[in-house]
Length: 116
Length: 115
Image (cartoon, rainbow over all chains, first blue to last red; front, side, top):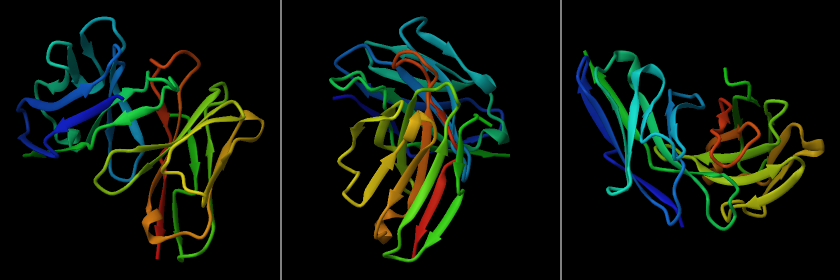
């Protein structure tokens, strides 16, 4: 079975500081991994995805993530935080198990707070 | 705007009442998923359609829940005899045609409050 663990339910950074949101996955097959962002009372918006091509993936709004198989990690980073980055972030893995339906298995989420 | 539309955006209902939500996916997307998200948690899978066929249902989907996708277009999710534990955000998602590596486009969700 596949799973995702996000370390840290809340992360607080100052505006202009580095953002690092941690995600570790468990999968018996090569995973497809996604980061989504959710603003209050909104749906989820895709930031970036890893589908076994380049291990360093660049997404929207200056975010990027690096797939590290040896560490089973897919951490999300941004060099300089903006106030508008304050939101909930979710790491997800696409189901490639026996059902192979492509449903997403999400982590618990990390709330990013950006302080002025 | 992702192109996936959900209605209503908010629904307040009394315990024991039935409610129905609607999702209109992007027209050429043949796969459709429903998820439930409770406060402070990540979305959890409920059910999956390929065209009009419901191919997978989560154990979270009790007998009080039913979903349909007539003609493979819009989908509805009905909850009968609502309970306070049903209060959540219900999200619909549709990925473009392709494999399981394609990203899902999410609607804005329907927030259900059972009082």
